Length: 291
Ligand SMILES: NC(=O)c1ccc[n+]([C@@H]2O[C@H](COP(=O)([O-])OP(=O)(O)OC[C@H]3O[C@@H](n4cnc5c(N)ncnc54)[C@H](O)[C@@H]3O)[C@@H](O)[C@H]2O)c1
Image 1 (cartoon, rainbow, N blue to C red):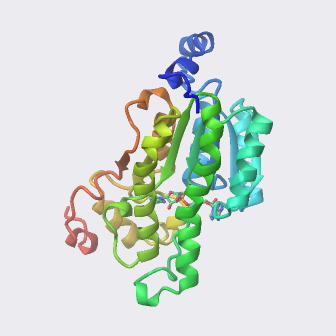
Image 2: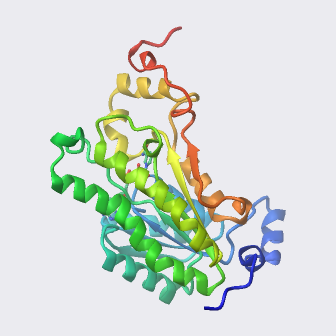
């Protein structure tokens, strides 16, 4: 098998003219000329990331099971002046993964960035293992972990055709420190972190970087239970060193990992949880604020 030219990603992505023009306007389009695919992009971190990737200059294919939501995200990408490709696809389906990658390459011309964002936290169904049904376990593992494998399986050969690319996988703070009582979710995210590490050597030989991110608690529909309860929200906010996180700040990290600025990173689980896993003072979660 012939290998692509070394150090491909840096060389391939230079679009000096466009960058200089944008830099004069105070904008640096670090992803000019690249194409991204984002799963679970109808809401939350996925939507914020798809829009941030577009603002950074990428054309973006967006997939989700929520057809109306993904169409809305696509409109936002077009408003940012980039091409959008909305696709209805189940991240937990190998066949949908194949279709999504093929459609992206066919309609947007190439694939440089894959953000495996889609995931589910089945609060009330996931929990302590004896209480979790095998059906719930299988669903969480299929979407959160097997889905990452399916997309990587089909995307890496396409990225290699252009000399490489960057894959970002949604792990969680629970990949390293589980909250307890979300056994399937924690196992799925631990699996994502380890797949990321295991995969990086082989992918690197094809010019593809693979990293995972581990946010803390982010203001998205996934955490609506927390956000709708002031005491819960305050407790979780105190559990982070600098408060709760926004989807937009995670999206900025996704752009960084997609860009050449992160070229030293591959096989990493980037802990980006505002200190949630760096310290734990459990009493902070229940005590009133000390003012
Ligand atoms: N929100 C957090 O605090 C947090 C923290 C750490 C990690 N994460 C991870 O980040 C990712 C995004 O989280 P979020 O908070 O934005 O979630 P969210 O629930 O707010 O949005 C998830 C999106 O994924 C879509 N989706 C669900 N199942 C799907 C499937 N089978 N196929 C395709 N799309 C599907 C939903 O329709 C939705 O648009 C998830 O993998 C999550 O586990 C979130």
